[in-house]
Length: 309
Figure 1 (spheres, rainbow, N blue to C red):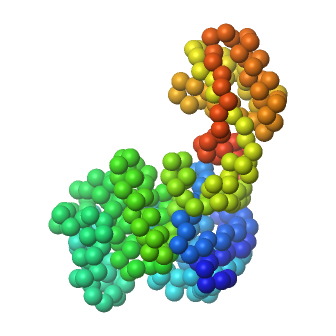
Figure 2 (figure 1 turned 90 degrees about the horizontal axis):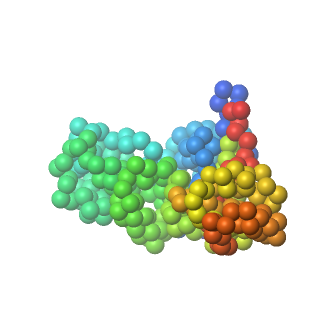
Figure 3 (figure 1 turned 180 degrees about the vertical axis):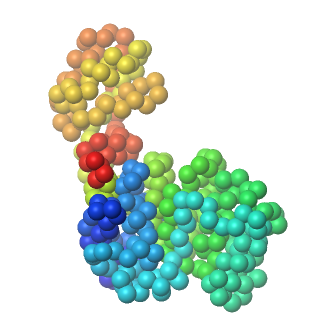
């Protein structure tokens, strides 16, 4: 592990109830990166994050996080990592300020008043600092949770679906703050289901049912997957969907509102299938498009086998 690598884990494996939830997982994350962690529900993302931050001990595998051994140094790793869980986990009957003061005392921090003041200012919470946490909307709870994660100035931030259930403006503000932390050298591993967030990450690791299917720089993924796509519009679309599913050259048919996106790995075969539909249904319009991240990840997921089946 080099000084520029914050996470370097190999072969992490964890089972529950006799099923491998995470199976031989490798990940290398450089310092200061915003690394996206994607996958369907139940794919092992949360379990992996908990192994990385020292909350769960892997049954197999090895690695270092912040230069510390994931098997032997879990307590020291937890001290230097900020972990934001899916569910809001602060005290709802305490105010914003009281929650941050409590977290600062838990970490045994010096300059507590100064650190709390700075956290409130960084996340735009100064005007609301006396408000009870339980009365906050989802977006403000999210800001408070992030402030609590960062109050001890961690070098690594682990965010488990941090923007689930918050409005688009709150999500945008949240990502602006993550980029500011990145500019200060803080490394972030973030799991998300939102494709518009995934494309903001420097790199993406995709895990499906315990197996890593993809790990690459975000800009290189479309070329690496090599998926071709066409857009079909018209009415009605349902018969078109039925005709295309299972057609030669078609690997994916996905409905996007009032249009269908049809994707495949073989450009010529895909185009032939789409043009056959056009010839049979004069009311539809077709045009080639670039396969987006949503199509790519639906395609990856469709080829994965659920480890609970």
